[in-house]
Image (cartoon, rainbow, N blue to C red):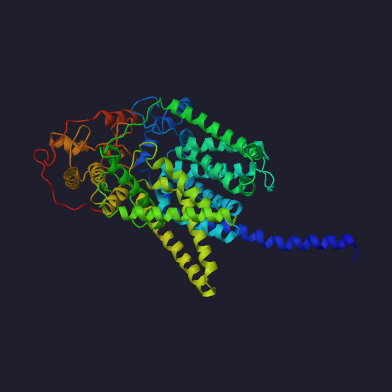
Length: 593
C-alpha cells in the first residue's frame, strides 16, 4: 500500500470517527428545540393580555405609521423619557421587534407568540453551546443544563407573555456578548504572561452586543461585569496565581497589562453608555407608589433591610420549586418583615449560608485550578438579578417572575454541576437513581410549564388564576372585577370590587376609587392605585384588548389614543372604604369560570 493510499484511508477513518459525535451534538440541539416547542405550543393560542395591551395595542410607537424617532426618545410604554411620569424603561430594540411583528403579521397574537417561542429555543440552544465551551468539560452536563432551562416553569411569563420578549431577547444577547468577549481573548495561556487580546474586532463586537442587550432590557448591561470577572478569575487565573506572590508591583502591572487594557476599555465604555442612559432619563428616577413596592416606602430601615433580604430567598425558592406562580405579587402578597423575630428570617439566613458555602467552594476550586462551574453559575445567577434587588435603586415591583429568566441560567448550571458531583461520588446504581430522578424532574417541570401556559391564554384565565393563587391580593380581585364588568357580569364584579375594598386597608390619593352613582359604578368601576409612571391597568377599559365583550355596540366609534387618554384622566373622587354606592349591596355570588 502506497503512502498516499494509507493517508487517504486514515482520512476516511477520521471522518467515520468524527461523524457520530457530530450526530450526537446535532441530536441534542434537535431534542432541545423540540422540547421547547412541545412545552410552549399551547401558548400559541393565547391573546394579548395584561401588560401586552399597553406595550403593543395601545402603544403608538409600534404602529406601522409611527416615526422611528419616537421609538428612540420614548419609553417602553410610548411616553417621553424626559417626562416626569415616564416609567424610564428605555427598550427601543424590543419595541422595534414589536413593530416588525406588526408590519409582517399585523396584530395577530399568533405571530407574536411564535417569535417568543423561537427566541426561547435559540436561548436554550445557545446556553448549551456556551456551557460546552466555557463551563463544563462534560458535554452531558451542558445538555442537562439546557434541558432544565428549556422546561423551567418560571419562564412561562417571559415566553407566554409577549412583553416578556424583552427578557428573552436580552438573555440571547447576553450569551452572545459573553461568547464574543471570550473569543476576543487568546486561548494560549502560559505562566509567564496573561492572555492577550487576540481579536480586537470580537472585543468591540461584544461591546456592541452588550449595548444591544441593554437597549432590549436594562438587565442586559450586567453582562459586562460577568465578562470581566470571568476574564480575571478563569482566563487569567494561572499567570495571576503564579506572579502574585513573587513579582513586584511594577512587574505585576506590566504582566497584567493585557487584562488591564481590556478591563479599562470595557469599564470606560460602560460608564459612557450609563451616562447616556441617565441623560435620556432626564436625570431623574421613575416614580412609583407604595402599592408597587411597599418595603421601599417603609420609614424604618430594619423593615426595609429585612424585607429586601427575605425577597432574595423567596426568588430563590421560585427557581428551586416553582409550585406557586402568579402574574402579580403586589398589594399584600408578601407581607413586610418588620422584626427580627419573624420566622421568615430563617429563610434569609439559610440562603446566606448556602451562598457563603458556594463562594468558599468556588474560591477553593479556583486555587486548586480545579473547575469553573460554580463560578460561572454564581455569575449568571447573581449579576442579572442585581438590578431587581433594590440594592442600588427602587424598583416598581415586589416579585416579578419574568426577571428570573436570565438568573435561571445560573441556577440550571449549578443544578447540573451538583448532579455531576453526586454521580461521581455514588456507584453505578446511585447514578441510575439520580438519572431517573432528573428525568422525573424534567417531566414535572414540563407538565407545570404546559399547565401554566394556559393561565396566559386570556384575560379571564389570567385574572382568575391570580385569585386562585393569591386570594389575599386586593389587586387580583380588582383586575378580575374589571374583566367581569367588561363582560357585563355586574353582580360578580360588585362582589370582587367589595372584596378588593375590604382588603385595602387605607385609601389615599390615587387609591381605590368608586363612582358615586350606581350607573357609573357598573360602567366605569373603580380605579386601582397605580404609579403615575405607568399607564392604567389594561383591564380597566372595555377596549383594552381586541377580545372584549361581544355585547358591546359594534357601531360605536373607537379611537385607541382617545380611549387610553380617557382612562388616564378618568380619576374620580375617593370613595370611603367599607361602603358601596347607593343601591348596590355586596353580593355573595361566587365568580364563574
